[in-house]
Length: 487
Image (cartoon, one colour):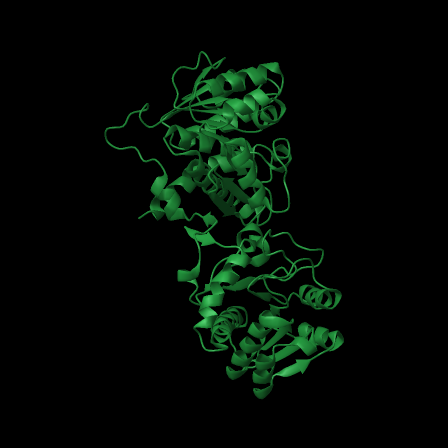
């Protein structure tokens, strides 16, 4: 697990470090990290360093200074460096002087900058830092567009310029980085807009002791594997967790099949299905005990309710019956809509071990969604008194007590019909096994995304949607991988 801090928290942590560090030393340390990653990128992409051409897009202030000092170090390693000054009168004086001393080329007009970018092997984005908001200004946008047109990779310094460092929302014109180098701590943009950042390298500049507890955490495979239930020699089908699935309908039987099957594949000891799609569930998964109603299902340790359920009176009654059990409940899809429609159902859910899993449209039925998805999820979880998993390219899991997990999925492979039903089954199985809703949501999101990566396969290709059935089929492999990662 690693933490994510806001730009304001990182800035506050830098102040005491700067106060006890010789002037310029912190910037030089950061720039050294940028230069090392740039050199590695050049070697990986071109096979060498000497004589390669790097263009540094230099904005005002310290971010531009980081880029200029990195350019100084690259010149010392035999790289041809051109610095394009976007604000010549506000360029970092010491960094500019150092690059001039190493005979780096300095350009102050966009036309010559575009020519330099066209012939570059790598571009450093040192345009704006974490204090900036909004998209790129026209001159910077022209230079970034030139790199995109000629397919020159961009290495972002701290964060990709034009992408909001707090929310990850890109402006109209922004950088899509091949890789990013950040300093001291990861910021929200690195997990909320992972595809725009590329692989992120964190450079330690000594902020650790000064940082507060992380407001956002990110799980890794070892964290998930350590919590994934593994049956022992004394376990049986009941002790491993029995999950009930109240989902699907005659109109949407697939939701029941996907959610039930995902629960079975997620090492649930037993799955009980209750609903009008019982015949379809039995046909697809003969090991699942299928009945027509929640009352007939028998004893379970947790419920999944909502996928394909319907939002009529019958659906509302089913949700009420499940909430009345007092057991852990995962409410998805139609169940989220019903919570938005009925104050009485929200009252039943508040304070109970309930995990709701809306996408953006469903979220708007129960709370206000702003560009700051982390803050929106945190506020909604506290207001509703439930744990909330907000689906998206970056999945946010917020507990009522303020804890937040983010899973930075790097693709749109899960943007397909039925993939949420699979996630519901996985998380429901974990609830039945005894994980608290926050951990169940975070671990399920991790494995769900891993299964999408596996399910995509070479025949579908990067960036392509993967059918939910492929995700479901890949769950066993994804679970085995996280179990192996725990050591």
